[in-house]
Image (cartoon, rainbow, N blue to C red):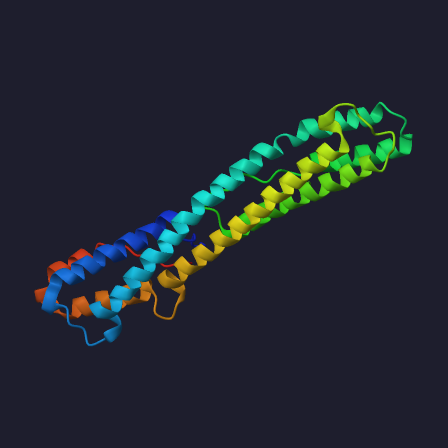
Length: 244
């Protein structure tokens, strides 16, 4: 029988792990002298740096997410202008003395621009790193195709519109603005990926990680028997989900 594939931990799950570790630490502090493990890895004095490091990496991630959202929103607004720009420019090109073959070449590039699927909107709170990177490739492709199209227009001396917004210099400025915004998004994506990696290292990936430490803490509390039973119950109620 096929084994059902486990889903990876969502951002909500990561945040719950972070919150639960903070709560667990408070429970251990409340135990006072009763909490006295011989395993130094789970002593309060050694757990405290993990608590501080976790707060730092989570704050870093929470800072990067809105920065990513803002620059993506700005790029989206600018990208929406592309459809009208290429429609108007190709129609102007069709109206002047450019050979039929060259007009067909321009139209082919327009079809390529229109046929490039716009990536689905990415939710940085839930999307996997691979999804974000794939979405970026779609934007990179559209902006590169737009540059090719503008260069094709510029190669024809007959393409000299009086309308300022259709002139080559304006089209180039638009494409360059898109390129700049896309570069900013790429930088924001990389920062977001790094922030997630740092968070995941503390929670799951380091040799001494929060998930492993909590297993050891629960085992130690259980070993204390009746005297620590209320604290053990408080700790085991806190669910920690490992990364798949």
